[in-house]
Image (cartoon, rainbow, N blue to C red; front, side, top):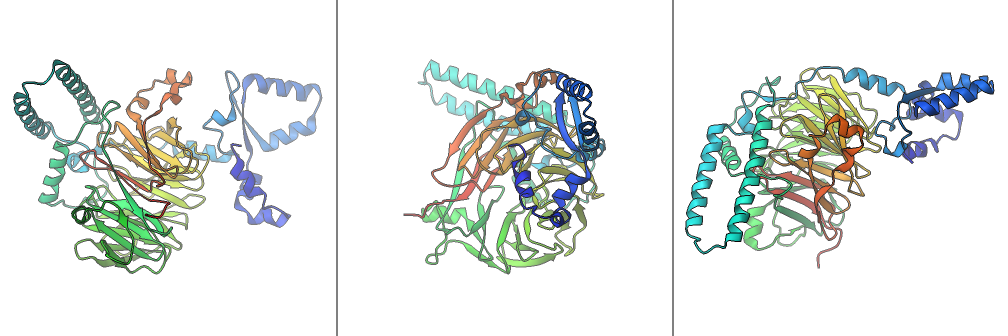
Length: 527
């Protein structure tokens, strides 16, 4: 069952010539098969083969099988993260790549602009304002009960502890220098970001976020992707008819409608036309003034949300471009395609700066590291790779998924990464060691989108099973090696599940104030 998809591929081998044509079949014949086995079983096997003088069997084993012997009791293959690759040479390649040095810290001179950290003075100003407002409101509520006061004190104490833990974690995060020339951020944008950070709600396992879900209705199965701006004010959709539609939520709110309708009459969106094939992504720049779209026509287009016009058309990929994602600071963006490559671009050049090649199948998702020095890519070859943006070199290979990787998210401190696959499994990785900390089991269908909260304590996941789940990932990163060996790494459960009636979740985003936005198309027509 672990290798069911691989076996289904081999069903297509009906003649000797097919073995040469199929890349997967060739790789199996050229490398040894991995079999993980405990020491006791291995010794029993060797004793049997020598006692019965099975020289033919011994020859086949030596030539074709790579035994991975471990101490302890036998384990089920279905519970073993490392038993996902059939052939043996890939693990050796991954181990070699994972020895390379990486610097996962935050940028030393632009910490405040990442949306993940505030200086102590700015944090103090925001807290003093909040405290003064709180004091004035408490004075006016003299008749509140003792029970409510105790509850408030307990809640404040919990929030204070969570805030202290977060600030301590971020303060101990290493500082690194940018490898890319960072764009200059305008004063207005910077002030807006700092204001959002001062008013951020501190989330934890005891303080859940508010969720705003944007539902597309009457899409008639034409919606390929959806995206939400960083502040939730704009929502975009990419459609099969080669169009992009952008909704301004302020205008929809004035009209008294919460659903994003796609009908000819009474159009309440901005229509962007230019692609000559289905549009598979439409993502916003951090300030929300630009939209990047990618299409089956192999191009990427840059649009202005202020001018509602196409500014640039980027060409370089050889096949369908599945998505394009802006860096945390804008200006740079990464794209990935059916041609098995990811590419780094800058807004002012029509040709790519870097090309990342190495995946054995489609690249299905990409995510920038918070310090912009690395990008992560997930592929249909069931692996995730981390690439150095400056050199274009692969510096980490994450092996453990049993189906194609569809979504990625980086923690705000840049130390951890989450990846979601087609089977509904989410894996938490430590970047420095390429080690899987814990799998998060709960979804029963494709995990299409992942997003960390601003302080990194919660992870939100959206799936084709029509649910949004929240996970307490801060506890998973505190597991000791002894606990992992004892099998306690699977103890994590989702803190809360938000089910929709019939809407698969296409997009998730935590705003800088820690409001969670979600979007997806309903599978039922609007009544």
